[in-house]
Length: 89
Image 1 (tube, rainbow, N blue to C red):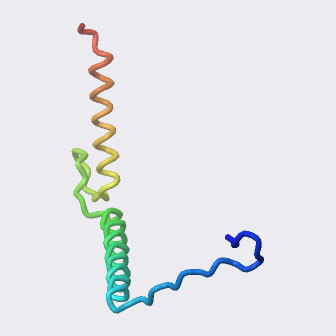
Image 2: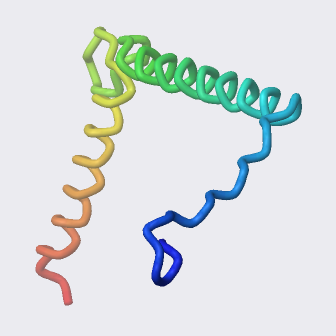
Image 3: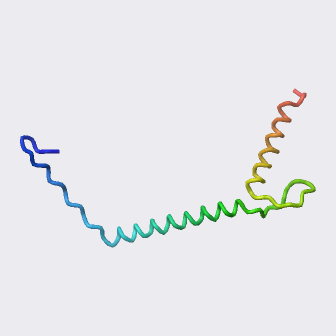
C-alpha cells in the first residue's frame, strides 16, 4: 500500500529473528513427521503380509488383514441380504 500522494511504498515492519525455541520447535516437528511416516509405512507393510490363518473351513493357507476384512464384510452383507429377503414378516 502506498502513502497517498507519493510514489514511496509503505515501510515494511521488521521480522523478529528466529530464536533457539523456534529452531527446537521445527526440529520436533520434523521428528514427529518422520515418526508418523515410519508408522504409516510399518502399518502398510504389516497389513499386506500374509500372517493371519484363513478363516475359511478346510483352507490351509494364510491371508493378509485386508482379505480377512473383505471376507468379513462379505459375510456381514450376505447375512443382511438373507434377513431382508426372508419370507417371514
